[in-house]
Amino acid sequence: MARLPYLDRTDLAPADQDLLVRDINLMKALVHSPNGARAFAGLGGWIRHGSRLDPRLRELAILQVGHVARAPYEWSHHVKIGRDAGVSDDDIRAIAEESAGRVSPLEPLARLVLLAAREMTAGPAITATTFAALGQHLDAELLTDLVMTIAFYVGVVRLLASLEIDVEADYAPWLAAFPLPGEDTPA
Image 1 (cartoon, rainbow, N blue to C red):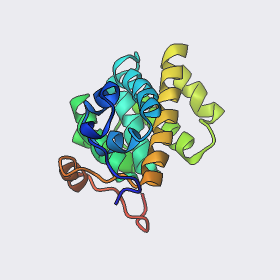
Image 2 (image 1 turned 60 degrees about the vertical axis):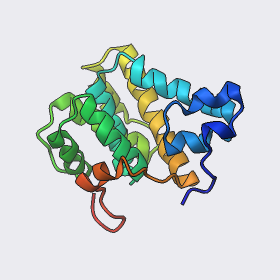
Image 3 (image 1 turned 180 degrees about the vertical axis):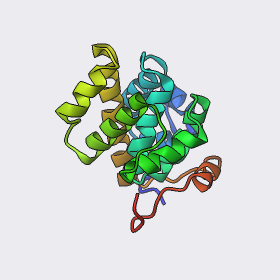
Image 4 (image 1 turned 30 degrees about the horizontal axis):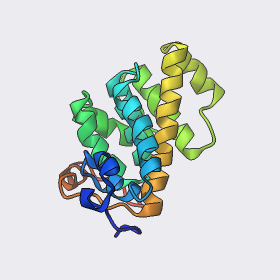
């Protein structure tokens, strides 16, 4: 159960009601701070709709962060969003393989993106070796976009856990179809 009550549009000042265009629990909690929610949505929106980073690679990175953090909310939402962005069921299963240290059939760049996301989530940074390898595939803008994406979603999973945001019923089937490993289960 969430640590803060979920607010509805009617709970907000008219000038802030647009913050709940996406009727999701995360935003219903964040609107306790309308200016913070607006800033949060701005960066998240740019990552999803303004970055030049390939949408499939972006979603693989986000899913990897959610997998490492064992974040059911993030994982369930981005399994759906990822599928809409070209992430296949095999790609999703490959995240578990790569997380467990096994080589998946993913292409080299996707494997590097997953590695970078694991390194940043575990902290504190992408290693020099991984960053240099990514630089063989991505220009400086795309590298920056990837780092910003991973960093933002590392923050998102910490926020979700701290506020104990609940997975909505609409997203529960995605979590059931692609369950996260349990805390005592190897990744």
